[in-house]
Image 1: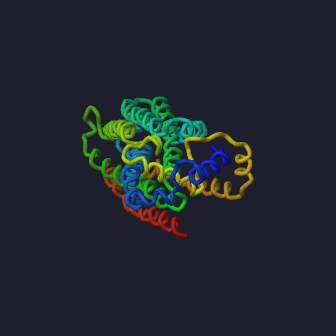
Image 2 (image 1 turned 45 degrees about the vertical axis):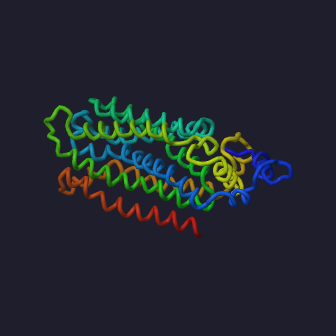
Image 3 (image 1 turned 60 degrees about the vertical axis):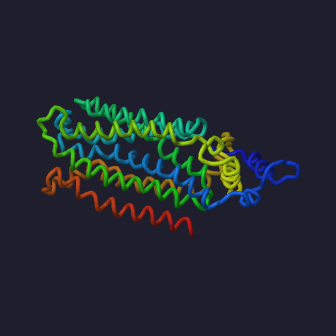
Length: 335
């Protein structure tokens, strides 16, 4: 989604022109505490983004833990059917990624993300009712379709609230929720794995029920507390809202409430070598990622470990990821 540069430039000039009646960022800095205001923004925005990305990872990867606690047997998965079930998530993700990016920019982002999270939590909870390959494949496809909106929405929100220099650190913070989710899901699977297989629900179904309900509640929290834009936020004063919005424009990111498709910028993006470098980097990262996320517990168990042990062995990997993600985000924001 491109920004209307003429509109942005006009808005950048608007606050400083004579007779505009508005305050410049410098004038705003004289009447507000910038550091305190930025910390207040962080306190209200970052925890919600962090938790959302944490559940994004947990709901996607709990399949691996469930696979060694009876999921494959209870759904009568034969041959390569488990591989197709794990791939279904990415089919759904791929099919909806592009429309999701358009909706994120054109709809009130907090309401869209909150509503999408309610749907995504429902899909996770319904997975516990699956008894066949077809049902499991369909539910995983729908989960991928729902989670396709999460990363674009979080990137969009981050670029709305923060300047170019602040974005890498903040992105590193909420992206670390990915790895924290790995630790939490491993501990959750370990705890629920002690449920007897003879129980009506059983361990793997309990995993999906607990995560599905928790994700649904998260959707309600996002609808209640995540603001759609700076202009409508309640935890900042009018002067602080003006300062928060203007500084993002001056940083070169522009206002996100006035966007339109610009083919010239699209062509510019497609011929930029950096675009394809980033595309290749993402592709090469996800090839091993998809395998380890869905087959890790099965592979670990094949080495002679028990199902419960396989859930705990993944924790050191997540700890290393937290340090790497947070550290590189901090470095990228300063170099």
